[in-house]
Every structure is written in C-alpha cells, then in structure tokens.
Length: 597
Image (tube, rainbow, N blue to C red; front, side, top):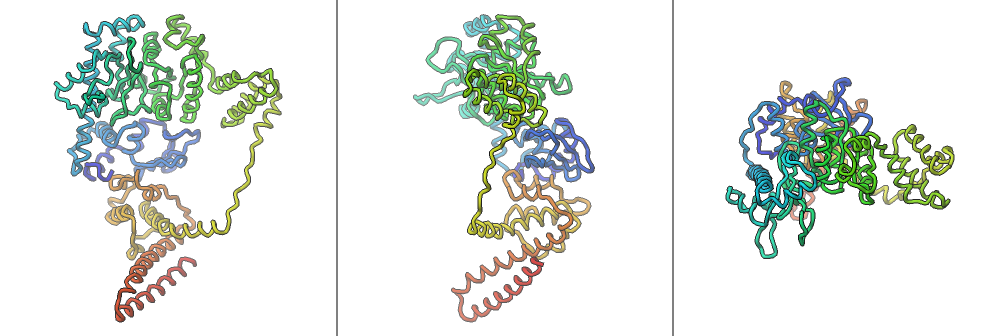
C-alpha cells in the first residue's frame, strides 16, 4: 500500500472518516468486550469469536487464522476487490472525492486499463443482447422460447447472442476500443492464422455480473451442433476469476439490500438455465457457480449474503459427487447446508417442467441435513448385507462423524448409523473414540544443536520484532530513549522505526498508519510485529534483553567488517583494528552478561 499512488495524508483522511468499527459492523455483528470489539471471523470458519478490532489503533486481527489489517485491507478482502476498489468503496461511503494518483505510473495505467476492460465488457453485453432481440438472433431466441425462457428473464439476466466471429469485435473497435483491451477483457481470441475472433462466437451468452453490477465476463453455450466446445467461460483476466464468480449474485445482493439483512437461505444450482427457470418459478434466491467446481472463494461470496444454503444440484451420479464436494467446501466456511434430492436424475429446469413450482417448494422445504445426505450417499457404495462391506461402511461413516464438532451432533448421527447397520451405539462410540496414536518423533542431538543455531541466528530478528511492537503499541516499558544506539537491518523495520520516531503524543503512530507506509501483506516481518503478543509480567526484562541483543548485532557487524579489513591492512592499521576489535569484544561480553542476567 506504500506505493498505492495516493498521498499518505489523503489515505489517513480517508481512514479517519472510515472508522473501522462502524465499517466492519456493516458486514458482520460485533460485540464490545472491554476496550475491543469481537466477532466471528469472516475469513475462516469458527464458532467462537476470535476476530478482534482495536478501535484505538484502527486495525483488526484474528487470533484464529492470523488475518490482520486496517479498514482498507478488510474491505479489500471481504469484498474481493483490489486496493483501488476498496478505496473507492470507502471514499464513496465517506463522501470523499477520489484524488488524482501520484507518482505511480504503473498503478495509473492499471486503473485506466481496468476501466476500459469493464467498459468493453459492458458494451459487449449490450451488443449481444441487442443481437438476440434482432432478426439475426432469431435462431437463439427460438431456442430460448423452446426452453421456456420468458422475455422478462432475457432482460433480467441480460442474455444475448453472438451471431458470428467478427461482428462484436468490429462493433467495439468502431467504438474506440483497441484489440489489446479486447484481449485483456477476454472478449477475443487469436486463431491459428494469427487473426483475432469473438471468443463466444455463435453462442448464447450470459453476462457474468458481480455484486457491484459490473459485467466481468461471460458464460456461453452453443445452441446448434457445432464443431467446438458446447460451453465456454471467460478466461482469467484482471477482473474475472472463475473461482469466485457466482451467477446471479448481483440479483441476490439486491434482494439482501431490500431486506436490510442476510437472506434466510440461498439455493445453489448447477447451470445458468437452472437459475433462470428457478427465478421464473418464483425462487429468486437461486444462484449457480460456473460448472460444478465450487471453491472456498465461492463459499465466501455466498457467506456475505446468507448463513444457509440448500444444494439443488443434478440428481445424476455427477450431481451427487458435486453435492458431496460442495458440502465439504461450504460447511468449513461457516455455512449451514441442506440438500434437496432431485428425483429421476432430473436437473432443476427439467423438474419444474415435469412437476409444478409447488412441488419444488415442497422439495426445498423437506431438504435434508448435509450429514444425513452424506451418510446416505456413502451407504449406497456398500452392500450392507455383507459383513465385510458393512464394516467398511461403518469406517467411512465414523470418519465423517468424527469431523463433527459437538458430542450432541455425533450422538445424533451415530444413531442413524445404528439404524442402518444394527450395531449398538455404544460399540460405534467406542470405535469413534479410538484414535490411532502415532509415536512422537525423536529429535537427535545434531538436530537439537541445529535448532539452537537457527534460533540464535533468528534471535536478532525476534528482538527487533519485540522492540518495534512495544513501541508501536506504546507499551509502558518501551522508551525511545533506550533506542538511541540501536539499528535495524530490514528496510521495512527502518521504515516503521522512522514512522514511530516521527510520531508525537498529539499524533501517535497507529497500526493503521503502518499499512499506509509499508506493503504489509508482502512483509512477513511487519506482520509479525503487528501480531506480536506480550507477557506483561516479564516484558520489562525482555525489552532490556532485546535492546541489548540489537546492540550486540550492531557490534558483531562492525567486528565482521573490521576482520575483513585486517588481512589487507598494513602493520599500523592492523594495530588500530586489533585495538578496536578488543574494545568490541569487551562491549559484547558486557552485553551478553546483561542479557543472561
């Protein structure tokens, strides 16, 4: 963030108007305990709050997963945007105008390219939609009508049609977009002949829209037999990441904003046309990922909108496997999951055509808990009339139950296994609690010595961390007057030390200010400083030891430098160096004695 292109003064003003507690409270529930605010971490799954906000220093830290940062970092990570996007969100909320970028031509260029890419994608979506509604789009429009897609749905989802390999490209070129921007937007590909062509040629197109209403890519499918792939999604670009795109998330966010709270539940299906059919039937809380490859980033996007997911994936074998994988991804990210089992290997679109929307509502209302579904699905892989296969099923089932957090949950599902296998619950529980104990690995003397050596090598960095953390957090034992003779090796350490020295009682150095001066995300040392914990009882002694350790390093570096000069020096110079080396050894001995005591 240090080279963000904005002045430090402007960023500090932005953050002073964007109180971190008020900002984070818009995204999650916080409770005040003492001086700090606590909540369930949005960046990893947990049931006990370990996400802490320090209101004084305006930064957050999770004691569970280690995530930390200022208000800009939080918005960046929670919203899934880049630094510029996070700043724009905060500036808009704070009523501040975005200043011109300073002294960062790369960032200025990147911002301009991103704006042009988003404009090109939006114009492509408009062009495809107009083509679909024109005589050139009749074949695609007929296809949609035959699938039961209404005109209102075509408008709602912005569906379109790419009629050939050239028209969209030529249209955007005439509008002033360069081929380079179209490539960066993922709108055109390069053929074997070296010429460019529309990436989604002769396909029905679905614009992929993020929660901010920006078109970031496309998903497309052929509607006639063609000698190329049936489905095609945008390639990875500066604005498109398949691993986090949720089709329909913009509509879900609109619903959430209308409710002024998270949705009671979201229905997750597999394909775009499944989403369209569900919305047409009145299930407007339906979304899809691109294919069945659900990722933790998809889960995080969904978690922003709801705590409850109903999986309504296809009823065939592939759909069952996708459901099992999806449960394993959604639950660790804090989502409660149920599964609605579609009959006859139907997908949601086919189900609604064969049955009624009332039948779909009943199916959803009777969705089963994820663990029940998993146990039932596992059981289908075994012949429970065979003792050997029954034993193997029990092993698989117990592995699943063992992952549950509470004994109450485990007891519920042990009873389910008992019903399927007729094995008493007490026996199942005994097997559940039998965990293989691996013998502790023995560390030989050589490894111990190596560990001690490595610790000594790193001890100087550990000392630097404690010194800077104590100063940054304004601990009572930390006096700048003790630091007159110390020095730091790491550039980030020196930058932080300079920031602390330039502070005053009226304008103290804050943790949030560190993020304005140092690229914390790419500086493990500064992350360790920010995340440092203190034992208040021994801290004064540790402070003195660390100051002495820092001084030792300074002397050792000087000693090493003098020793390197010694062979190349004349006799008089050698005597002078020898005298200095003797004085250094005396100082080192005194410092070592102080540290040991």
